[in-house]
Each structure stands twice: as structure tokens, then as C-alpha cells.
Image 1 (cartoon, rainbow, N blue to C red):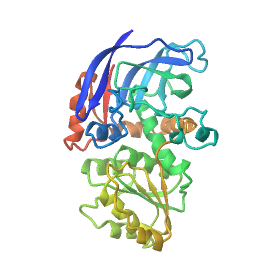
Image 2: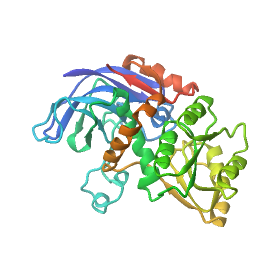
Image 3: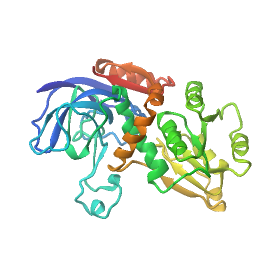
Image 4: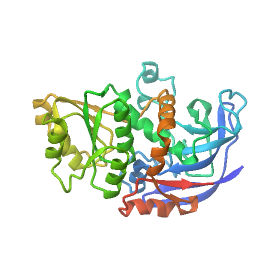
Length: 347
């Protein structure tokens, strides 16, 4: 069977090519893609700023925020049927190596594959894709199609808030630095736990959407962030600060606005190693955690949460392109357009 897929050959070089799909293995499913979101990590690979995209190994099909419908299943597949609407994992652990057997996170797998970042794991920027049953998850049929792309997004936010022992609750004041899609999903996850949330963002469009979702906001380019956080927290500082901007300004802020003994969670991917004030880190005895990626088990929680919040999240989609327009979709983001979520849609 032939289909069209996008291939990233190198920086700023996306090409639509027709390929012959391999035959299904017994444990795999064939998925007709409905839509796929463009993640900031995809953009950084497109710009040549990230080594996560392995076009040094050969051209690969990007896209890990996808939703599709199953059109064929392998002989041993039992939990998924033809016609199911599905999403899938990005990080694929082997479950056999020493790290997997030791219970370490999926991204610590010694044989890890990563959907949408390597030639051996084609992603969702194409008409069809193939994935093992174990990494494929059924979503409710009554969801509108775009909602599926936010499952992978929300899992990242969920892991940063709940899965990584950060555990905010109703007694906590949380500050989210960066109000993009992941930042707002982190904010929604923290709010679900009863925490008070302040979103810091420089884009007017994103600030307006954060306010529409019910969050207090601040633009650090116009107002003094430390003063606003002091007012928000009664002069004690944030109990939990989430760095989701991936900027030096964000890294500078985390040690200025967090209270002594506070928790700092780094959710963003930094293109370059940032400077961090380790003196304040030592002096205030901060706890800092990284939140790279979720676990497979988190999908059920994400799907349940999104079922309650689906009307809010539809507002995050700001632009839609076809597969043939994928190069200009990426260029639109690179050119500095303050988009929230850009989709490639196939139906």
C-alpha cells in the first residue's frame, strides 16, 4: 500500500514523498491519520537547534501529537478493533533492558524508540502510520477530531504536575512561566488539584486565552514579575514554579519568584544550556525536578481529564494546514507568529 508522508531531511528541509508501507506485523495496527499537531520540539528539529530529530541517521517522518482511525489490525491484536479512534505514545520502551526491568522512566530505556524523531519510528505527518498495539490507545468516539492531538500534550503537563512527585494541592500557589499549549495544560492540571495558578507570558494572544480559561495572568515584558508574584502569594513567593518557556528569562526568574524550600519543575526543552543562579538554589534550599515525558499508564488519566475539558481545549487550535502545506506551516511558526497550536489535517 502506498501513501504520502512528510520527511525531514535536514534543517528547513521537509519533503512530501510517496512510500510503500511495510506489511503489518502480528502485534501492529494500521492507522489512517486524521490530524497531527506541530510541537515546539518538531520546530526546533526543523530549525536545526535540537539533536532529538535524528536526520543524521536518515530522513524521518516527524509528528508525535497525532490522532487517527484504525483501518487494519495484526493477527494477535485483541484490545483494538478496526474503526477505533486512537492516539499513541511518543517514547516506546522495550520493557526488556536493565533500566526497564528496574522500573525507570520510559525515556531511560536503553533500546528506546521515539515516534516522529527517528527513521525507525515514523510519526504522524503522513496519510497513514503503523504502530504496535501496546503503544496505541483508544479515545472516545464523541470527541471532535482535533481533541485527540492534545492527549500527548496533556500527558507532558500531567507528568510535570502529578507524575513527578511535585504534588501541588489547594494549599499551593503555582506560577507557570510560559503560556503556550504545554504551559496552559500544566496550568489546567495544577488547577485540577485545587492550586491557585498565575500564568506568565509575553504574547497577548496567549495571555487572553489564559485569562479566558480562568487564570490570573502577567506579562513580564510590561510588569515586574517579582512584584506580581509577591502580590499573588502574599509576599512569600510561589510554592511551585513551572518553567515551560525554554528561555533564559524564564531560567532567570525561577530562583527569584519561588519561596524558600519551594519546588521548581522544568518542563521546557532548552535549545541551549541556560544559566541558573545556583547560589539562590543553595541559599533557599529549592527542590528542582525535570519533567521530560510521561509513562504509558498516564494515558487513561489524560483521556479522562480531557473528556471534561474538551470544550476549553478546542480554543488552543489557531491554524490548520494540509499535508501539502506542511513546509509553510513550520515556516509560519519559525517566522515568529504567536500561534497556540498548529495542526496538519488530513480529512
